[in-house]
Length: 397
View 1 (cartoon, one colour):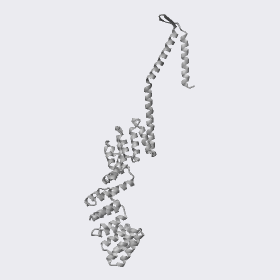
View 2: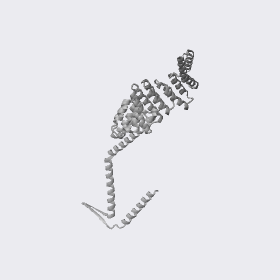
View 3: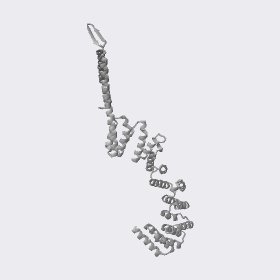
View 4: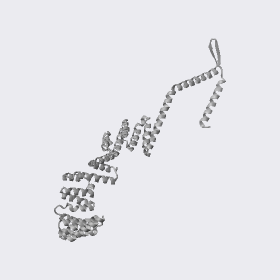
């Protein structure tokens, strides 16, 4: 027996003792007269009768009240059962969604709507499920059904994310634009969605801006950021390929890291050369080479000579002191000397490049450059020999 049981037993004994003690002092009588009846009771019996009558009336009133309130209690019980079932369906919907059972997830989400409080969460789950099934019409219906004010930002963010995944870039940006919160558009997830949408629309200026913002917040992998910055900058440069001034303005607006990228510097130099701006192209290549020594920039360098290649030859010979065995640099020097009609030096550099070349494309280019050199010198036999060697190397490739 527990401590509580012992206490109640002790109280019961105390009451019994008190009643037995009081019962010994039965000095009063109660007379009830209702003509022609007369009832004579002892005081103790009358008190006991009153207590019993009170208990009986109290129990009767409780029974009547319980019977009267039974429909309300049954309705409350059914409501609790319905809410519990709806919550269980919502949990099942989440389980099905992440388990890849999308049709079941939508069905469970529909069952969860039995509780109005689940409307927002169930709508988002069902919208995600229909998105995965490519049922975009039903997806939009589910999202449109989320009308609670405190769920609107989540609805719009989910709508933007899903539309971006479905390659509906305009719809994604429209959803992001509907977010009224002052900080809504500045959130990392919103910026990531906007980046995907701007990529799909090929709005490269916005892509470059968003990549820089996400990079500052460490919300994008560095390798991905580098690739996207290069892709955006490349396309922006190509968009300005007919306007040298606009191209140069864009180039100077890029960050130092972007300007020093061999890929971007090579593209900018190529476009400027096509626009007959070799001096600017030369500066771009030289600046990039000062920070990133790269073969493609060395191959582009002779094309920036314009009319006079002597300054470029002097610059390249300075580089040769620190890169004496660089085949691409020797090839560039050979081309520059060929441009300047320094036949002996050109042949010497090109033959050295051919000897040090560790890849077939460089060997092919070296043979062709030597063939042109010998053509200029009037040595048709040697020119033919080098053309033949370049052709054989091409076949190997």
